[in-house]
Amino acid sequence: MQVYKTKDKSKWIITLIGGVFDSFHEEPYAIILDEKPKPTRKWCTPTEEIDNHINGEARRIDYSFVEYSAGDKFIYIFKVEDYIMFPKVSGGTSEFFIEKEFVDKKIKHLRENNSLATYDWNAIECTWDVKDIQFEYQN
Image 1 (cartoon, rainbow, N blue to C red):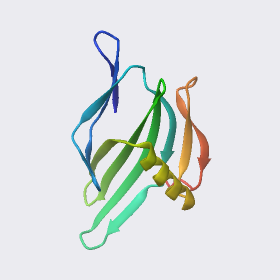
Image 2: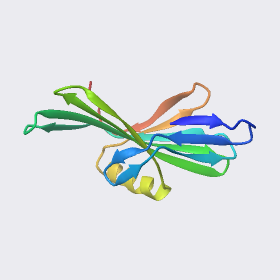
Image 3: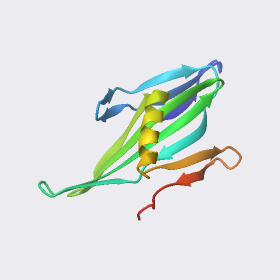
Image 4: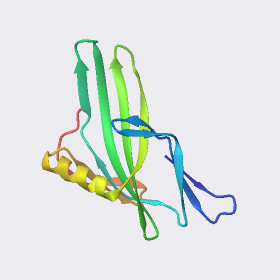
């Protein structure tokens, strides 16, 4: 995700790289906003580990949802970081704009399964503060 200001400094642009994941198939794209987007909240899941013994592949997938505010608008982004760890290391990131209803549904499901970490943006220190973690992070 990248945030840009238009040349005349009147608008803000959020760009995402898109990608392919599950039912999401998006080219890189952007939205234009009247006000600067500010992070407000982030939700993360534990790393999903998939070991396929048939082809010897080991994958690690991290999922996160981030909420931004821009004036009275809220923008939601779904980010997937998918890495193949074995037999060789490769991978990448996909990003998608999503609707609040999708976020609410996923967050509810993850919370019910104790698979959610919630963070609030600390604008003073420019970092994410832990609000709640329902699982232990692995090294």
